[in-house]
Each structure stands twice: as C-alpha cells, then as structure tokens.
Image 1: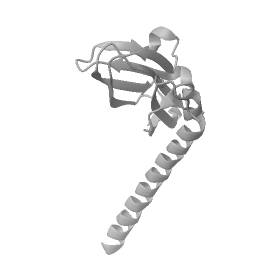
Image 2 (image 1 turned 30 degrees about the horizontal axis):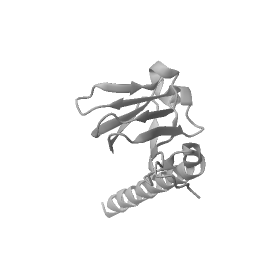
Image 3 (image 1 turned 30 degrees about the vertical axis):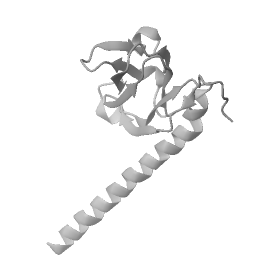
Amino acid sequence: MKKLHLFLFTLSIALLMSFQQASAQCKTFAKKKCIPEMEPYIHDGQINSTLISEGESVELYKTFYEGQDYRVLVCSGDELDSTKVRVRLLDHNRKVLYDNQDHGYSLTWDFIANSTQQVIIEVAVLKLNDEAKDLKTGCVSILVGFLNTDGLTKK
C-alpha cells in the first residue's frame, strides 16, 4: 500500500513539473515569436499562453477602453496549423464582435474600442480529424497591444 501511495505521489509531482515546464516553454515561445509581431503596437506586458489540443478552446477576459486603438494577436506554435485556430471576441452577453472565420482565419485584429467594456477573447483549435490518436497539441498565446498616442516612440 505504501508503494502505491509513493508511486501516485511521484507520478503527481512528475505531471505537475511537466505542466510547469510546458507552460514556461509557451511563454518563451510567446516572447520570441509573438511580441515582435505586435509592432507598431506596444505590448501591454501580459503574456497569456497555454498548451491546447485540437478540439479544445480557452477564454481570456480583457477590458478595452473607449477610443484606444488596439491589436489582438494570437500566435500558435508550429505544432498547430494556424489555419485551424479560430478567434472570436465576444461582449459580456456573448454577442460576437469579431470572428476570424469571416476573415480568412487571420490571427491579428486591429480596432478602435467604441466603448469601455470587458471582452471575452475565445480561442479554439479546430479538430479536423475525429481520431483521438491524431490530435495535435501546441502552444497558443494571446497578446494585446495598443498604439502609443502621446507622440513618444518605443525604444
């Protein structure tokens, strides 16, 4: 019985460590690949990255302020086909404000906020194959940037 508890404890620690390592790899991926794609927008400093598999979705809640010019950028790792990454922005009533399916699955959207509101950024990796053994998993990062309107330039 003690061996079983020790085995389960060791397995739990190993799984936790592998998840943390994967999360760190996704953040490193976001810093190297995604942040440079924000130009000329200034990244807001928050890196929202996760491992996701085909058929799964994630949501991020973000406040956008009236009159500010924004860029929402979703990056996917090489493991995932970027044409299978669907991005939707929804208002608090879940009304669709933007759907990249209507824009050739573009992973970037630039817009000026019409009002201050909390928006749900929903990212889903579409599953094109129903066989579970063929599902791919990879990093997905959601970044938000804004244009600097005070005349200062980013160095």
